[in-house]
Length: 187
Image 1: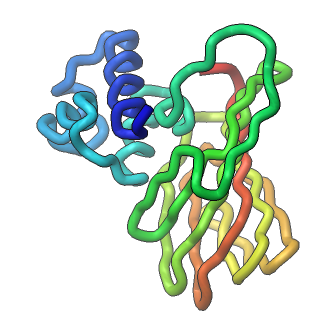
Image 2: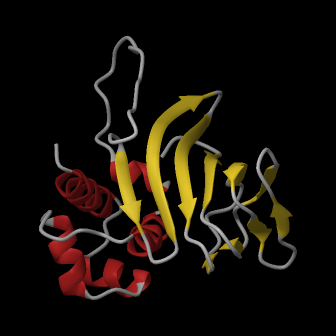
């Protein structure tokens, strides 16, 4: 199914489940009501920034908006080709959801991440107890809590509290990394 249709259906279902009106959800996310209506109808491509804002308002991981929930049953092998998977682009950061899994009472989402050269993005805090883990493959990445970011190069790894405002910055070249987000309970 096309990404805009999946996102639209998930947004509508979760918003309805949370008993939030279209107007209230849009207001809390800082977007227009018409924009949210178009997103829910599957007629508008979302930006990464918009979906992060909506995920925060709805209290769900970003990945919950990007893929249809699988049918219960045996888990087959999962292969996501470079051209596959739910891909979102923002002005600074591009992500591709590679996998979502619930294990040990936690939800994990694994993303391929690209931060554009010469750019900086400050991500608003996620809900409490969200942990972000990054492994840098290429480029120099300044990341971590906005109050105390770290500079990482290829092969470097960081884990930090995603429940505080945090930064992704590529001072010189594009950065390619793997991002794993851990949430405290299934959503």
